Amino acid sequence: MKKTGLVVLPVFHYVDPSDVRNHRGTFAEAFDKHEESFKDNMRNIETWKAALTKVADLAGWDLKDKYESKVIQEIIGRICTELYHKFSSVYENLVGMDSCVEEMLGSYLGEGLGDVRFVGICGMGGMGKTTLPQEIYRRISGNFEASSFIANIREETKNQGLVSLQKQLLSMILMESEIKIWNVYEGIDVIRNTLHNKKVFIVLDDVDGEQKLGALAGKYDWFGAGSRIIVTSRDSQILISCGVKDIYTSKGLSDNDALKLFTWKAFHKPHPEENFVTLSKDFVNYAKGLPLALKVLGSLLFDKKMDEWKNYNIGVLIKKSLITINENGALGMHDLLQDMGQEIIRRESPREPSGRSRLWIYEDVIRVLKNNTGTEAVEGIMLKFPIQKMEHLRAEAFSKMKNLRLLKIGNEKFPQDFINGTMQLPKDLNRGKTNLLN
Image 1: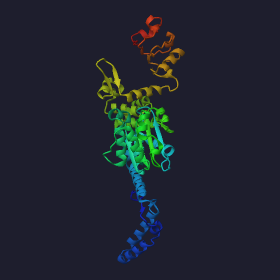
Image 2 (image 1 turned 180 degrees about the vertical axis):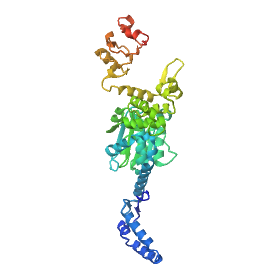
Image 3 (image 1 turned 120 degrees about the horizontal axis):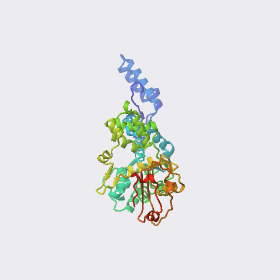
Image 4 (image 1 turned 135 degrees about the vertical axis):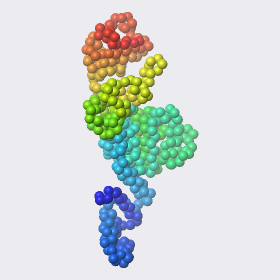
């Protein structure tokens, strides 16, 4: 209601809304009795009549000719949606998520249609493939008979195995703690036989193999009419091979949304502090709209002074457990961070590798060196030759790379041209700036 700010959701439990609106039938009888009891205060009677008329005009549910269980399910879904809109503003991690959710709901999921629909969400690690279905699940899972969200399938399969995940899926849907399944094939039969007549909403997060998807949600006919299954994966080919036709590709954040997300992490408020605006924009530009990069960078800089913002210290990354250095001096990092860094570099020049600051993919490196298309943008090259692969390269290929600081070339069988010394590096690369390793 506008005056009170309350949300009213009327349920007409075998009562005709027109009788409520026009005060007919049992309502007329009730008001006759009230008028006798409240002769001295008829204003209350008129207020109640006006309220009933207004309520009857509100969108709600009429149980006439409907199953109560279905209407209850719809009511729960609507309440969940209302609660989401009331409290969603406090979730700063969801910056830029609304438009993606609306696109998924409107163009991909087709909620309300009677078909069974599989929808894929694809993209590299750190792009929000998990956050997006989490938010969709939070908004609409109440509209289904049952729902289940299986997170981090890639890792959980290694730790627990597929049977454990099958049990988890059924446990959430059936609301039972003890699910007896002894092997994957039995699990497939139980899932199919249990869910084939249920309208369910299932999210399978970070699927990295066809067998895993096949064991948890193998075919459309496993599920009842109106069911929706969302599958996220870094590899779109897995989704395609399993027959998922509708695939949504995760997108980076816009500049404005990227700045908002970074600011929430760096300052714990929606706007950067005055003296840090320019530096904040520099970091946002570096992150190229990748949510994970923005969160990591922002969190690292929280409560740091200006000089710490201007100097990026590798020790800080180690303290935050973002990277590791083993006893041999080898640098390691989480695969999500590696994917994130590689994607940032790719976005420096999406179509032409020679415009990127770092080159490491064999085909990209060979293309640049053979075509002599290197530019001043290139600062580092790591080239690992496939076994038994021979490439004839000329030193001139490095002549345009004025800012090349790191060169690593190696293989189990190092290229013969390097061993024989017939290929010489440009002089600029021999001034202590370049590492040539085999």
